[in-house]
Image 1 (cartoon, rainbow over the protein chains, first blue to last red):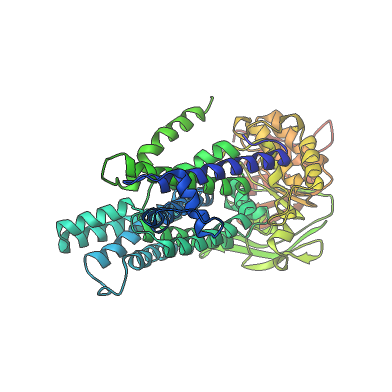
Image 2: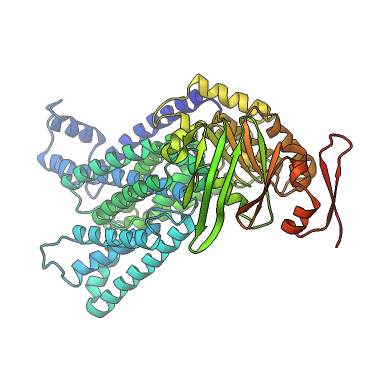
Length: 345
Length: 254
């Protein structure tokens, strides 16, 4: 699965990252060009170089505005969200030693939805609180509960997963309770759409915030990639290899919670990416995290941008919720990987 | 490297699992830890290896109190081989042995020639050099245990702790693993179930009973009919083996 000498592995990783980065640029360009009003790819590139002051091509102001103010920021946020979710998935699968772990396993999305309905339905904060802030607060409340229930994540993977399940159930129940007792049909629909995820409405400030969070998270995770490898045979084994287990766990749980909460509060709880992309990446670059983490982030970014394009072209005149698309597009790919990676015994 | 434990105690809630254990292991010595189930062998081993913090008492490795050494620095000197480590991750034999270099590498350091040499040498020691690319999942129990010992060797330790390394292995592989460990130029402490194997491969043996040291000495001194009856609650006859003079235990059905 992984090549034998590290130099080979490094060359392969660099090649893989370069190829997927090129794909990402093309995907982002396509996502910017495609829409209700299609724009030529050439115009998209010229528009970007214009904004950067490299060229001075003539572009219709309406196109320039659609590209720069609507679609490009949206495509880039999609890329960052995909990268972040895939990164969180890879980290949690390693820390919890569970192939089913994904970014929402620690209750973050359930908490975010409760926070969101508190703002949408109950009107908490009386308009001063944005939906995003409510969702962010809810997400962190859920994470704090999980951290508490699992003794600061020191009680072992299964205990932590159970704590996550309990927190998810609790916050989902709270969400349903609030929606059924206080909400009207329209609000319930709004909440559902928000939960399934949407990149509509994201703008440059969202991009800047998310870019910062993703870069910092990725840097911290890469610094801890070696330690994550040491978790292959469990916590005690990691400790025997000199890894400060509790500290690594707490830091990485914290980073994934922060990153997931930021993404969920911006674009909703987009499922499947965080679960599947790390498995796909592992299939290509192997299980060692120094390669797996950057590869996952890159694949996640490409996948999400393509899913976003699909969400806008599948149904004419309508945007399908992105969470629906990630599953619809993702499952067939995943099925192929599962089939090819099936145990030979 | 010598290992010295002074008055170690450790417990969970109110139950004491290791009680006031003192022992010493001389450099290069192979010490066996034996005792019935629940006598505290695994817990004591973890205290000695610094994986658990004792409630009281201290462990010194080469004259240094291990409570004052960082995890990383400690694992450059001390390796710990688990009973039967397992993973679902699809790793190769070489991947697993490379993990042994973890305490020697900084967060972003590349793979050095010293690292590669340590891995190659370790794989050679356990006779798995030709298997480096094989998937760990496809190995047999004995091969997995050898790979884990190779990983421990890649740590370049001076002391090795092994927790029942021969569990679930057939007798051929049990003897093979212990002979290999014995041949290493290391101080080692091995928790063992099989008393005859302990007699065959250990320089000295510590008998644990209910968390306390019941006896300590050479196999001849320790493996007596009286101790076997009192600690292990079996009737046994001990005779000198004709091959090497070490005690050989024959159990009676009563």
